[in-house]
Image 1: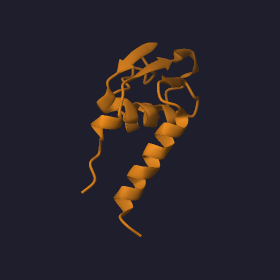
Image 2: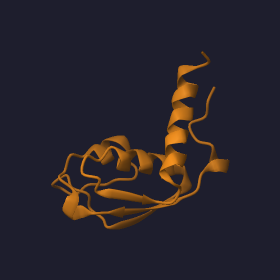
Image 3: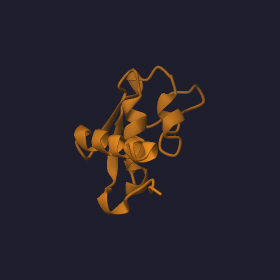
Image 4: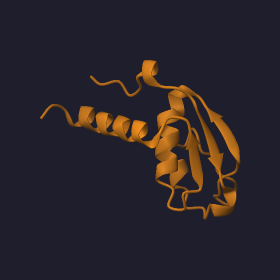
Length: 96
C-alpha cells in the first residue's frame, strides 16, 4: 500500500498570495482546504503563510489549480512537485 506522504522527502514551504489577483474561484480551497482559507466572499484571505512539511504537497496542488495564478509557492522547484504528483499517480494506478 502506498503512503500518502513520505516525511523523509518533504520540507515546509512558504506561500505568498496575491489577493488582488484572486477572483474567488475557490479551487485552492477545494484541493487544499487545510492550507487555503477563504474570506466570507470566497477570496484568499492572507498575503504570506508558512506551511508545514505534511501539507506542502497539498499547498502546491492548491496553488497550481488557481486559474489566476494568485498563489506562489516558495520552496522546492516546480519540477519537484510535478514529479511527486506523477509518482503518486503511478502508485495509485498500480503496476502496469
